[in-house]
Image (cartoon, rainbow, N blue to C red; front, side, top):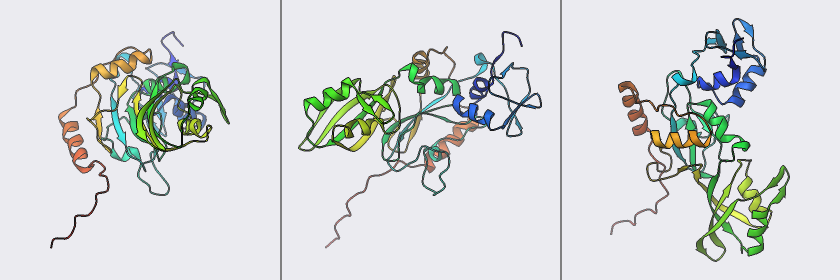
Length: 284
């Protein structure tokens, strides 16, 4: 192979088939072939090679030729961060605009009872970098806590707590008001382990009653996306994420007329989640 070769899972991720970790699993499961032979982890390929994924040919793209898209989605409680649920529950992917020849890759996850900011991209390498612990991307959450929060609780969580899967800590904790046993805080973590925010508070004998992610790296959740809605990030916002991931900038493509029509129809179909309203009193 020449020096222009790249790891197979990296090229597949760039083609929009999934994150690099997902592609490593697919290779191990025997779903990928290179030039007619079954691929193995560690294979390196060139753009001129022939690759199939689940028996279908893959269009390989050089890094410089691959545009990059990122969506900001405001996840409501009750949705799952999975493509399909055996129990038929709603998933976050059901609300996203449809793509041709690519698919949306989630940058991190939120559990079913957590709402707020989710990022999706067509760039598997960007997703991999932004999720990897070594990149140390900040995730900020708004947390409503039940119980009396004392100074020693906050200090313990900032200094570090040993959880069942290793040490964890908040890099920042700020009180945001509230009364009685329901007080709001904003907290920042540098990893995305399962239920990490909730488990840190539980380690102090406190219960999280509401949890919402409000920031991922340089992207803040804002009014462009109500609960259950998405919006596409601007070139400047996508470039900011690429800088955090230490990746070169790439153009955010303009929507084709077909995509504009299709995405507009999708948005009209997928109305934002509405909170429960009190019924109007009957007329007398």
